[in-house]
Length: 115
Image (cartoon, rainbow, N blue to C red; front, side, top):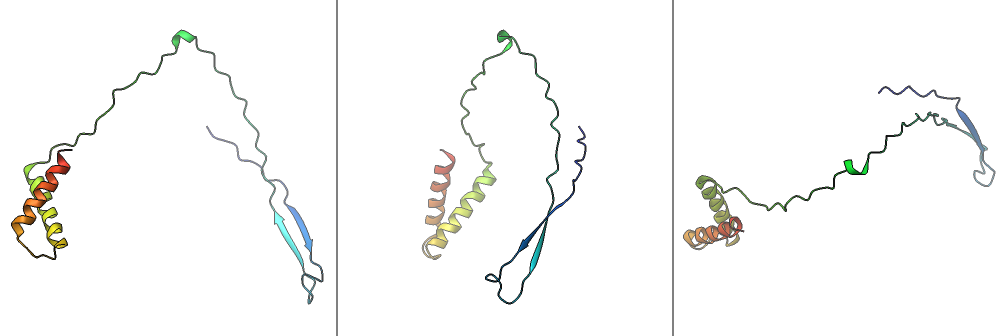
């Protein structure tokens, strides 16, 4: 629906005079231009016909959706474990046995995926 453009009415100007107390050296007149707000006409609203009470349906409740993650492929799981093992080794200053880091990473990823 195309709305007609509102016509802009004449601008209102106000003059503010300053006193000697505000500016002792000069008297300055400041003009402010204020645009009048455009007047918009409200379109009449058509009333909807009342629907019979029998036509209204009660909202149906949907069963609660459970969040299930799709099982990652073996390649994705391997990459997840490798990344976790790297960060575990980094926390330990890259010292210690890499096998123990890998085992800890496998346990961490298994716990996250089996929730």
